[in-house]
Image 1: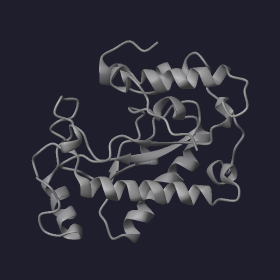
Image 2: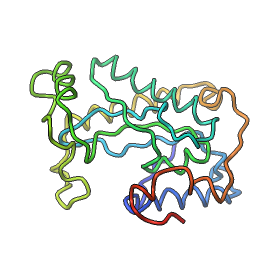
Image 3: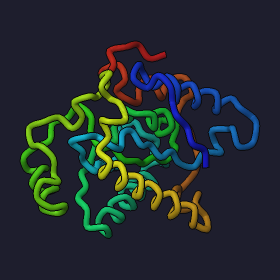
Length: 219
């Protein structure tokens, strides 16, 4: 298991993209791109007006290499299972490649993860759904964004919703342990695998929505 804290995500996934590009040319066992089985992305986990967001593998970009889709959909179901077992609400979120899992997914590596909300608005329906399962007043504020300090200086440790953070961390721990207990994790994630990557110089440029999201060139 490798824990990574990527740099420069906000200006175009630069850290994770660089890491993937280096892994593609690395020949050291354990450092090669083919040595990676899955990327678990946790960005972010403790938004004040939180959701328990789960990346929905069904919404993957149409350019996603097909070998990554079965495992990514399994990851969606695995996170949902935990929240359902705990009788907690959950929300589908887009699996569009707009966070640091994007460069991995573009290379055909299975990905999954959680997202507690950023600059999106919490709807009345969403608030009521969370209130119903968590208790009155626990569903947050309808009509307010999930994190008013998103990409702002006020996004300090005091901005964390501790309840949401604890539940998301528990879900992440459950999933990691579940994967670690698989006798053949590669087979579980890639049941139909014939490993082929997209063209090394074009796939990430075309894959995700970085230009649209950040308004920056992607190179």
